[in-house]
Image (cartoon, rainbow, N blue to C red):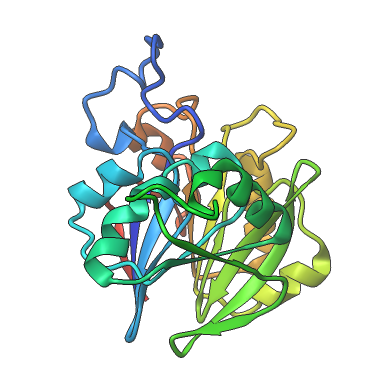
Length: 253
């Protein structure tokens, strides 16, 4: 399985418009962060987790030719705002795009993209099949385990696929859900801020504390704000098995 990071930034992205901090002005391409999303290629399928407002740009930059379905972590705009741009895949693949999410997310997608669900939608609207998931699923022979957490008070989904797990926009996770992550090799987890606590997201100490409970071989931090200093400087301060993810990073699992 191959994992490609399409974006590793927060809702504002990095650089942040109008900001003149060192990270936003950095020339290091790893300090340029589009909204968080990943593209996974397995034996029989290719799919994305989350589809934010940068999706069109991400698809062009990485020449994404095939997307079989979309997993969605939650309903915030930086995670679903690009769903209208799946239209080229409707055309090229000749079928609707299956979107998997929790009930709250699926209801919101149907409201936000109402024009695709009208009795007589206008020509060219994206074609979705919305599927509510609350337990583990198998798609194209690939087992996807659901990890439940909370983004503040909002339910949010994480996903385990074999030895890999992806948790973004988590702030709280119950011990019973942590147990589902036993034995993974690679954990991707959000860490919005280096130190300061946030009401909706793990900061770096909280992310590291959770990683210590799970004990994966490697940890990659995502959904990183511009409050992290230059990439090279920030990563040098992390434990040996913890890394900052960056746009374009590829992992073979």
